[in-house]
Length: 313
Image 1 (cartoon, helix red, strand yellow):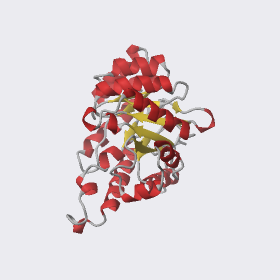
Image 2 (cartoon, rainbow, N blue to C red):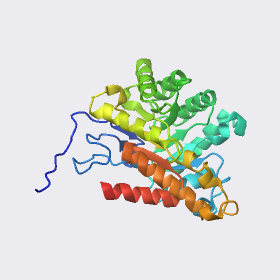
Image 3 (cartoon, rainbow, N blue to C red):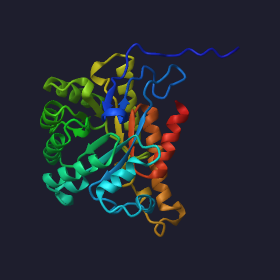
């Protein structure tokens, strides 16, 4: 018997959210089919790939990343090179150095760095904070003001600071708000409800549902993203129809497979290649579950995932 395809196209859709401005803006979301099911119906906006850099520059980065950025001497030069990385759709600037325990960079200095990066690139910008919700709220407000009109996504508004971040980033300066929850569909929905009750339009909210490197409790990440997408599409849950962005680099390059030296674990092979593979495997799995964008940092990872997305669209 011949195979007869029965496409499953939902009447609901993931919200579309634009980042950036002018001809270089990108659109996340819009799908009416299960993740990567382009054989059921065309997917209007393919998943996007971001390149992460930090306010610490190239400090502690693997050799391949250092080599890619060559002799970049300023954060602006590094951002420009990140934007030019083959396969990059946007740049993510993470403020690791703003963490009180990691340098406690001042708000004023964070604003200066963000402006330098924004001026150096012509593709959309995502701003990611540190581990302190209080410090994030402070720097996000001032950066949102300094980059007014740039249509920047800020990762992330959490339960602890969503009022401050939502009011400043989303309402006062009309930027995009990333709602971050801890790998739980109920917490994700609750935070979206709270942000919309605050006045942030649901079309200006993107979800960061949390992540983990493959093999490190990743089954919870996979099941959560999958459940969110099914609720959004099959159940038409308006409070879960926001696009999903998943930071990958910050999770995969800190696990033992990426950190253990070749001297300590010679049987594991090349240390840098291990990190690349962890990044690729985790990103591919997140996209298969339903992420609308992933954030990576190694050129090899960005090229591989971009090629995968292009082949599946």
